[in-house]
Image 1 (cartoon, rainbow, N blue to C red):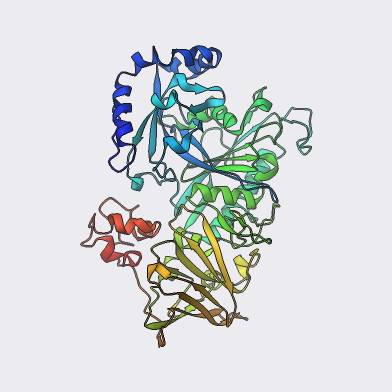
Image 2: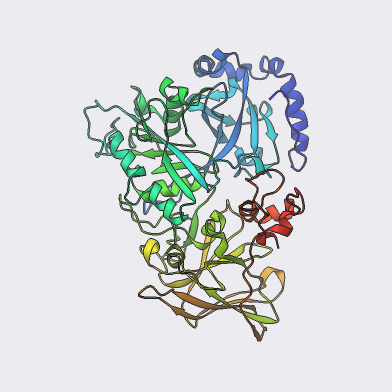
Length: 566
């Protein structure tokens, strides 16, 4: 872009006006204020210049991306990191720069989860390992561009349709070392290309089969295709210095190789939506304490050889690509851990082996994925009447055994975080769930790309109480009346009461809400196109508030067409 866009709704407005002016006179400024910075890092800058300014650039733009790692079992939770990514159509190709330093102050007030914050960076501030360090000097050279429209930036995180996944295997297969010995650096990936392909796309429990089963076939994982790709895998011989690289150094090196770069060139016939970079184990490659990393609402994930074949890892990291953050809960000692919810793959409780666990995701994540939207319902607790509702489990829905008036997930909207309720029957595709089998489970989450928190697990006669629900001054009560685990093809069902303390009249189950469908269409969408349908409006609690009365199409706005907005 030739112009920096001002932020209308941000605390950065004043700062942007100065950085925009600065960007327009950037060449003169670099000659003065950045001279000391350039001299102090001359060797590094020459390398950067060779890679970037060799194409005639003094600065570039990139999208700020949050990246989340998964820790090995028993290890401490990992803090998210920030990167800045150019896209495949950029003159640099797909490059991920690390953002370090005072990022919190620099991006104060901005939600970085959706990839709609962009910065303009002078090439001279890029340091070793492709790091952009935000300090007093560089913060005055880097300008922020903020589109303010996350509607436009969620292509990678769309949880429907076909995804073409490319495995980029970076390995020195001729290295005389044992990759299973993780005490000694080894530049070899243990799995062959064929084994990696089978581990991700084969018929066993893996990325492909778990997402397809959990989504009822609405999300389909396919091997990428294109020149040099075999069954979704392209192999690159590792550079000789790979054991001095970080994990994102390796991916940036890989994206610059002709075999990969040509896949994204203009006119390429390759079909690639997501990239999984597989590389030698730590301590050869520095993974910064993680087993793997995944971008949030974007398309890249990074894996050590020893963890990539585990569904506990690759299903989890792909979930970050689809816009999901972690599923948290108190651990056995009562201390909250961001990975501790065993009700789905966005915790870190699945079995760490190639078989993984037979389960899907917790109630909040399943709601936001929207795969089973016809069996989801919004419930508004009342202070005058007790609502008696029926819950059926995912297993029975997957087997086409539904009951009239029942739902798989209930959402209780609040002025704070919303609650989500499901019946967690341990059967079929959920038979290996790692927590709360055959219980009614309550989970809290406020928007799609937010960490969820386990709140309660209830059996018959038990109830959950939350004071001052939605600012009403009255306590919310969720009470389990009964549960029945169906056998011999019978549907399992739980009956729950939901009300605000003081309500006495038991109301009949409400009529299930159905999204409106225009004549001749499979579903309604707003005037901006098919991506902005009722599922999109349900994905984040603010979507209805911000856009529900706009973008009328087929005679309706989202507030009129979508149950999520009513």
